[in-house]
Image (cartoon, rainbow, N blue to C red; front, side):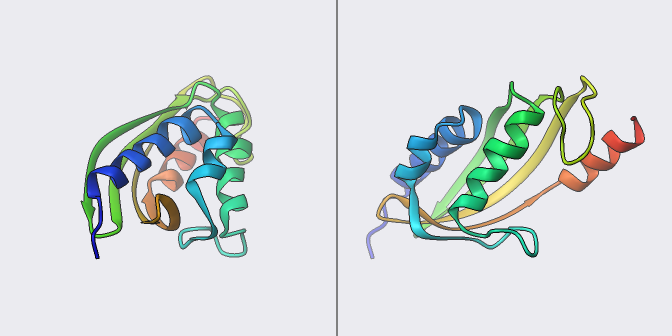
Length: 140
């Protein structure tokens, strides 16, 4: 198969900037396949596209409205794009049960996205969110 790795990396960059950082639901709908599966969704959570947008627009954005995504590195192979990034912002809203602290939150993320026809079809990811939450709880 012929994969356009550079195009796929640009799609992932666009998703991170316009969807995660800016909360653009129209771009989210444009870039998501109807049969998308998030293999990293918490057990019992929606692992489809609605679960994904919920995480960004109902969990992260209310907790840190000034959210910023910094892409540190991307590697593309076949139909996969791996991105090492940082998601940061000021903790001014409720974050998974932790009240606002006014502190800077910094979440390190590595994710892998499988794309098909310019759309996200699968996602796998790891992050240091549990360590970030522990640090916030310890400083409440």
